[in-house]
Image (cartoon, rainbow, N blue to C red):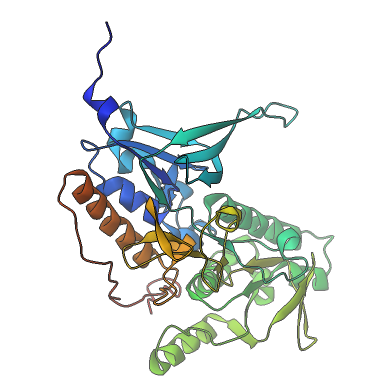
Length: 381
């Protein structure tokens, strides 16, 4: 005769996403109080602040990845599970998460696709956001993003290919200049860190391949607003001087189209380039758009000050949202790793309290400890 175990009687806590918010929640959840199931397309958390350094080989890709099973070792023990899948919907009335599992890709690039549902007692939505292209034509086809390891790999591969082609005797001067011109769209932290990293790489490493190519290596940052806008004027001016010393050119203007060889601005400026990196912030993902929940004016999941998801102005029972996918309309916070990680830690403490009949009544509060941007080797801002 089979007897129920303590694990069967525990509530199921389901986490969607392994970014900063999801990873910190997963790490801090007491798995003696609940069965944990994590759903994500990747089995690791990416240390996104260091992604720019991987594009030039300063860091290896494995240095910025931490497996979710190391973040929470209990995932290696049943009934706790990690499922690599795509979440495409949530039935809040039935307390079910709708998932798609993708099988192994064969030599013909085909893979089996199967759907399945996961029941939850408490649901934490931490699936993040997608790059915001502002519907600019050509961005999705011709620009690179820098939020995932595979995107950083793509940038690194393109950089190396451009340098190798520019060094061929069959490549004319104008084509070499185009190939060695990197354009970064967006003057936020990721954009300027990548620009400074590439400028350092051009200055220090390209000369080891062919010193004559160094004079053709250029980096341009395109920003419609203000570069280093998150800092005060004094720090902002220092950052601009540092970029100027690295040879990074700052151009103010909005991009209206991107093709495989050029970027065109609203003012009619045409910039020939061999690599475009798009870093203009984030917008709602397809899952966020499809959920039957309230949304903020910017399309993020609407939450209250206890991180509970709202529907028709009221919290949905046992459903929370943290990180870039969610915001409190009354007090929106920036889409930063610092915010997401603290939300994850707070919510884990809150859920642990609820599961142990010691509820935490205090709302989530975020206090900024400051911001930092790396502008090349040994040059923080």
